[in-house]
Image 1 (tube, helix red, strand yellow):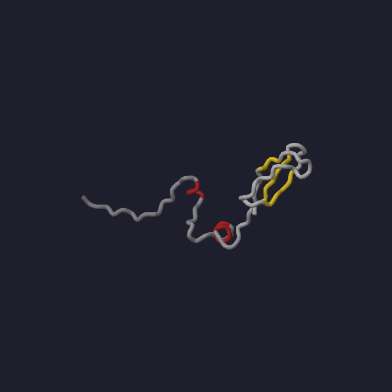
Image 2 (cartoon, rainbow, N blue to C red):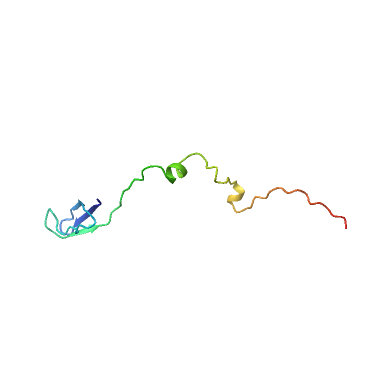
Amino acid sequence: MPIYEYQCEACGQICEAWQKFSDAPLSTCQHCQGKLTKLISHSAFHLKGGGWYVSEYGSKKPNSATPSTDAGESQGEAKSEPTAPAAKADV
């Protein structure tokens, strides 16, 4: 169940409430009976089990599927492969 935060417009008191999505929002303050306003707050969540972060992103080992780059490629210069000398044709 999500936890919602409300702030009283009269006394400024902030309270939290565990509510279902289908529950109606709270409207009166428990302390002074003033009008409550629902606050937007940060939600917290935790990813459990294996996944991309644990197996790919968070590992310190380089991934063998990812090609390595050098400083020249990161600056937009293409790395050229050595080529065999062209055979001369006598014309």
